[in-house]
Length: 416
Image 1 (cartoon, rainbow, N blue to C red):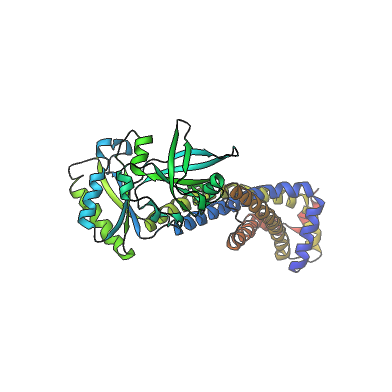
Image 2: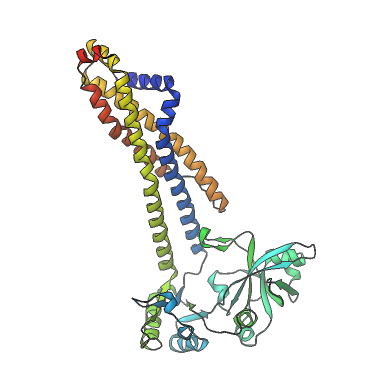
């Protein structure tokens, strides 16, 4: 008997027992759908994070506090935080290599009300002048605030063209105008000094600037005055170098400087310098591990589904014992019988796998769309899923098929 006849017989058997066939496939469908959905969501998040990092300045690294081995984050005290004088010392020692040192305050969500009564969502970013270099902002009009604005506590702000359009009908009319910001705990007024082109920077589940809100920049000193009780201490700062090739050497030297001076006798805290690329690699690694772990858990249902297929085929062998005896009496070999049942197992698993791929793809696309990262499963994931389904069919179908093949035709014909 050739493979086509086996496939035809397997499909006829599925048609005769539609409900039982569907219930047999259910474990495979759920397992494959879960794996495909998880891979699709993970793929969307990875791409989003990578795209977001691509929009950032590559000539920079972050210096931040880190607990030493044996200590935790709660062991870091406020007295351990960086202060503005720390960054001044860094400028003096490494000024030839550094373009900007950027200090940023805690973010603050707020809204701006237009004359039409519409609320525009903004995230307030208090920072020093180099902040525009981090996301490579394109200024449409005016200029970004400078060091003098920061030191003088000037109530100026930089808004996006989206906010300028909502407030003033366009960015060309925004310069020098007052922008009233409502944080929920108070209303603050800043004067527009510049307008930048809004570009969506989406890090998926990790946040970022999205289509619903934009960033409003104010000088660092103004931010800590208005929102942080003038507490000018911080746990991290960003260094932007003149050249990308200086990042490794300068970051190591700054890390070494702090650990041999400021934190030399501090047994709980140390400084760590990390580049954008290393941050991306760390996030990608974490996401891959999480995706692998969740995918592994989802794959357990495939094992359960495979056992279900084996059980149903064992029942089928028992029900069709006389049929097997007749076929053997008419000349069918043990190889033919084994091939028939393995083919039936593979067909069940492949159909379940295809349904699972379609269902998982839809679930993954829907979930990624909710995160505004619509993504379809890639061909590699689909091929792996279908191939895995076929493997399950062969592995779990072999025992029932082999049992059927070993039946004695005389005993099988006598079976009632």
